Amino acid sequence: MTNRNEQKYPRRSIRLKGYDYSQAGAYFLTICTHQRKIWLKNNASRQIIQRIWNGLTDRYHQICLDEFIIMPNHVHGIIWIITHTDKSSRTVVGAIHESPLHNKRKPRSLLSKIVGYFKMNTAKEINMLRGTPGTPFWQRGYYEHVIRAEK
Image (tube, rainbow, N blue to C red; front, side, top):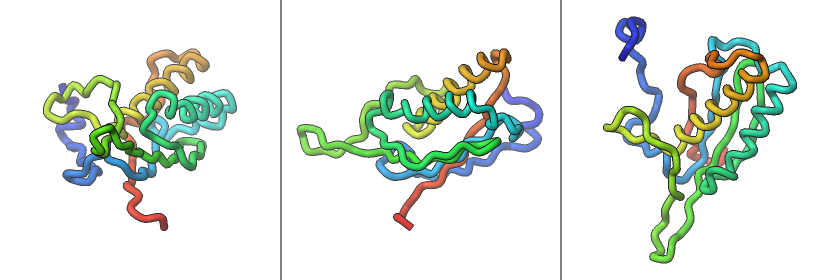
């Protein structure tokens, strides 16, 4: 079900057409708070966010975490999706354990699953802390940039 605002102002994808966001590489992420509200000055919220970010590698063994910073209304981080070689000498990206989106035509990429897991768990814990269960905490979607060179 689409709301009227989405019908009037359709969302354009900022993703690279045809790019597989599960493939090995480095990704620079920006995740903003709902309506860009200044909610990340609270030390307890910042600790929750940092703990869940640091724990992503426990859940997703095929990633490495790089730089991460918490700003007053958004976070920036770099995630490396790494590959390993299986016994048949094929390079593969590790298994994805999350369920797919409701859209059956387009399965979720590993990157979107990681971000979804991060957003869901941080929002749940922070909303419990604030006594505001079910309140949107993060903005819909996120921004990513495929890092193509070390520069």
